[in-house]
Structures are given as C-alpha cells and as structure tokens.
Length: 342
Image (tube, rainbow, N blue to C red):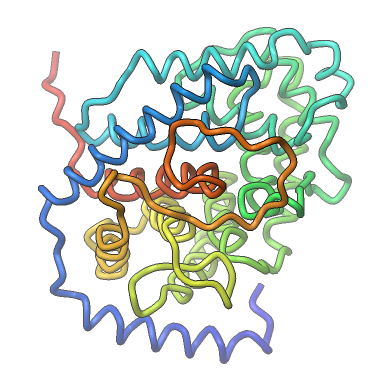
C-alpha cells in the first residue's frame, strides 16, 4: 500500500520520469555496443569467479549466484558463455552444503543464515540442478528459519547484498518452492502465503527493497494491481542520468541500476521501453575499459581481504555484484536465439 504521505513524492517522481522518458525516447543503443559490453563483462567476471574458487571453498552470493545470473541471462539471449564454468559454480555451491545435512535440517549453523541458503538455492536453480538430499535439507533450513510474520534474516552490516528484507523473503520463499520435496510441499505453500502477505504490507526503505519487492510480488503470484503499483515505485526512482541509486543520498551505480532493470524486464517491462533504454545508456557510459563496473563498498570487513582476480581492490566483491547485474540487464535487451522446430 502507498501511504498518503508518500503519494505526492510518488507523483512528483512520475512527472520527472515522464519528462526523462520523453528526452531519452530516441536514444537507442547500438546492439553492437551492447554485445561488446556484455562480452567484456562476462570475461572479467569469469576471471574473478575462477580465481575465487581457487582460494576459497565456501559458497558466496557475490562470486557464485550473481555471476551465474549474468551468465544464464547472457546465454538465454544468444551470447556464448563458459558453460563448463557455470556447472562448476553449481557444483561448488552444492558441495558447500552437501556435508551439512544434519545442521541444515535443524535450521541452524549456517553463516549468513537464510540469506546464504536462499542465494545458494537460486544459484542451483540457475544451473538447472535437480532436487536431491542436499537441496531438500536446504529447503528444510529455510522453512525452519522463517519468522512468524513471513520475514527472514537480514544482515545490516553487509549492505547492499544482505540487508534487504524484500530480497531475503523473495529468494528464500520462491526458490524453496523449486526444490521442495513432496513431504515439504504443504509447509512450503503456507510459507509462501505468509511471505506474500509480508511483502504486500512491507514499506520499502532502500532501492533494493523496492526492486526485490516487485520481483517477489511477481514470483509469488500477487494481484496485477499490486504488482503494477510496486513497478511504478521502481520506475519513479530512476534518476536523470538513467540510473538508480542504492540509497537516496548516494550516487547512481551499476548495482542498483542493473538490478532495477533486470527485475523490471523479468516482471514484464519491455526492454525497448524508454525508461529501460535510458538505463542501458547509463550502464554503457559507466563501464570501465576492463569490462567491469566499479561499485563502492558499504559493508564492514568481516574476513581478511584477498584478491580474487577482479579489479577495484577493497571494492571488488560488491563490484562483482554490480558488474553481474549490469551484464544481465544489458544482455536481456538482445533477442533470444531462434530455435528451429524438431
């Protein structure tokens, strides 16, 4: 629901959005430029993910799930990807949980809690992983860790990747549905009902909340009116440069922009819409020569820093995420390959 206090702000944002759309309506990015940007982004992401796996043996949201999203989106829109790497990333993810069945089924003992397990389920789903004993244990963990009101864990010290309640609820609820065993199905349906009610009542406080709430309402089958209202709030947050910002007082960046664009198209906005095209221009103009996008970290250091092979030093982990979202958003503008009938 939109509060009366926020309504004038929303209307003002929509007016700004309309004017912005008129100004950029004729801006159509050259498909060759987009393909070049995506290819360069995939190349630098591949380097970072390979090097990460050589130095660490635990699953992460930033070096597994989001680079996998970039790969899969690119593949589905006609780009050549390293398919072997995609499957290796899935195996790496699965192995991180394969020896924790007892702990998972008790609903405890996982660093990052439901956010980590939800992102891992998403990663496995991206690679078309088949349900097995490990994924069943992961679903059990998510069922046991959901709060009574439908919400899930978030980590306020790890923004923006782990501090959005809307993201936590969306990925935990939707991807447990994808891997639920027959014995878990009834409880998963109850969980989804609680999660949807929570998303409908939730008032977003950060851009990722707005974007993920839209995605969650779409994935969990909310009424079209509610989805449309959530989409309007995301659209209204676009800035004059075409991008989105993580927080109102922050500058636009590839993380918030790529995420907003990818979710907008995943929930029904055409990628030839002027708003989307304006966002594409922002991403093309902000990409670095090496194919990456720089995103400044806001997280508190928890582990000792190490170089993963991705640029930007202490900002590299969140920059991997920003680059992944940007690559996925750009790749989605390209026509999927045509498959001939058998």
